Amino acid sequence: MQQAVYIPQEEIDEELTIDLKKIFFVLWNKKYLIIKIFFTILVLFITLTFILPKKYSVESDLYINKANSSNMMEINPYAIEELGGAGGVAALMAGGGGTLINEMELIQSPLVIDKVIRENNLVYKKRWGIIPNKKEGEFISTKAFLKKNISFENKKGTNVLSIEYKNKDPELAYNVVNSIINNYIELHKQLNSDKAKSDQKILEAEYNRAKQALNQKVNTMSGLPEQSMMSTGNLAAMGAFSNSAQRALSTLKGQVVSGERSRIEVTEEAAKVANLSSKLEWAKMVDKMSDSSKVLVIKEPQKLRDFEYSSPKLLINILLGIVFGFIASLFAVIFAEITDKKLTYSMLGENIIYDLENDFSDLKLLLLANQDKNISLVCFENIPENIIPQLQSFRNIHLIKADISGEFVESVKNSAEVIIFATVGKTNSKLYKQIKTMLMEMNKKVAQEVLIK
Image (cartoon, rainbow, N blue to C red; front, side, top):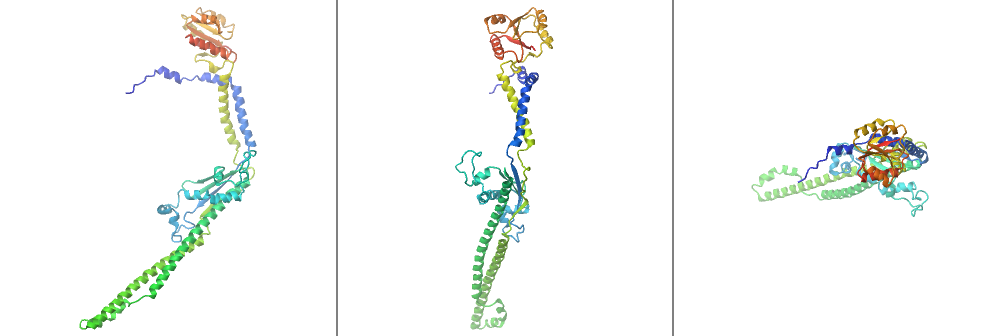
């Protein structure tokens, strides 16, 4: 069984307390450091805009017609198959929308990219222009090409495929995108042509076999047509009295049945030949259409001029400079506060009087409220002359010079509370920390920390 843990409200309040005044003084005290670091970083990022090599981004959009140059299934009987099997009907009814997974794989395949690499002489070079590379001079791989500066995207809910390529050379960027489009279209033409030729070859072979079978059926037809039975009325009447007439009538019926069977077989073969002939005509039509690609370039790649670079951008670098300048300044302040050999605001405790002369009334209020207690005033720096007479009016206090010595320990031992007097930027931070540690070990409460200007 779990036990509820009670946390006093006072502890929660203490944890959530943030001394905004101290934070302000910390930042104000380091304002010159903050300004120096912030503007140094900002100027650095602005300078990088003009120093870093420019990158040019060439884009193009392709519309992929999944129905292979025709949305009419009467013209292209393979439309449903190309749309993806059983799900193709729904895709066709919906207008062919959806992701182009197969097309994404095709355009990024070595069948396209390897040709692009060779056409544009994309080879391995020295790393950063100075470090030797064992593959130097060799054509880069498809995998290496796809890792850097190139992106392919299927615009959601459409059959549009977007290409973007970045490079330091605007001419090369344009040529690479153009090369990708041309080789991708050629690959589609090749796939369409191969498919059409394969289908046509199969259909032609089947059509020839069916036609040959039809000719054989026609040549071997036997028997009499069904109409022959219409003229056998007298023969049927005689069959009731003559056995020879009955035999003749039976023979005649057999020949009619044989003739009807041959007619049905010929009709079936003729229908089969007609069906194959129709499909063969379709295959020939698709073969003729294979020279036209189902890829339509709806946004042509454009040649960029020298000033039309995509990165670095001055505005982006200014924003980055502001962000990183702020972060760097913050870290610089933290580091300076931690490593400073003189007292800083962040080293002070919670109860602080920031200006003794202007806020002496706050100190006076504290002393009046604790007249029955022995209070030691530990001084790291000299208290202003005009303040000393006012302090001496209190009988329960005594001034002690901050020091690591037995005399200091004896002086503080009989005090109920301690008030520290120090100066930010002047008091030795190491001595300050040592005195506070000593007071804590002696269980002496630091009632107030007073800053002397």
